[in-house]
Image 1 (cartoon, rainbow, N blue to C red):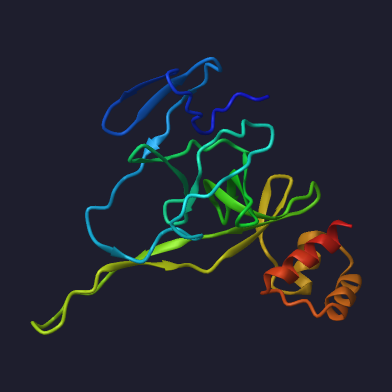
Image 2 (tube, rainbow, N blue to C red; image 1 turned 45 degrees about the vertical axis):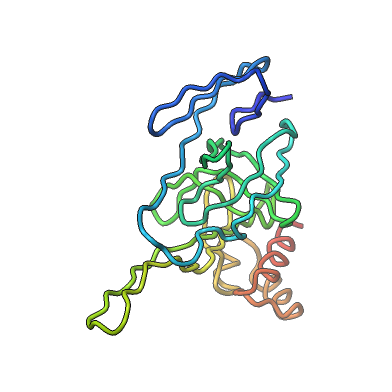
Length: 225
């Protein structure tokens, strides 16, 4: 079994803790792995709403080929981080390239990836919708922090900053290259390198909506056959 470098397994009486203002260092035996999860920055102002796309609750997770004794996690879609609690402190888990984190209760799997899109390279978590060596389909979930407004009179209160869900971004992955999900059959034929006539027939017969997630999945699965 692989040694866990992603998050911390707590073995009572076998952990050594040392910390500064930003980092908690943990050495755990007998596995001997060493991990440096970053402590979550706490906002010093009131913000309305929540940055957690799936709710504030920490959920059980499973990670293939890794120990089952891992912390419950939750996804912070504003910070693009997986969070866990140790005692009363909140931490971000280490990002490990290619690690797939499955939330059984949510029926959702996130993958930690470094990916490039529109000239920008980012390391973060994407939801796996189709996982295939030919073409994979991912969804990027994101929360934005919007600015509140100041009252211009003495009768109304200032409005706090607030979290607002951004539109989901759907990405096609092929050989570690990422493309935005196509808008129509012509774009799809170019991205997937397939015959447009065959693709048109499939789209029409299945009434594919290029903006509907379930239809996106259906289309990619068809291409992969």
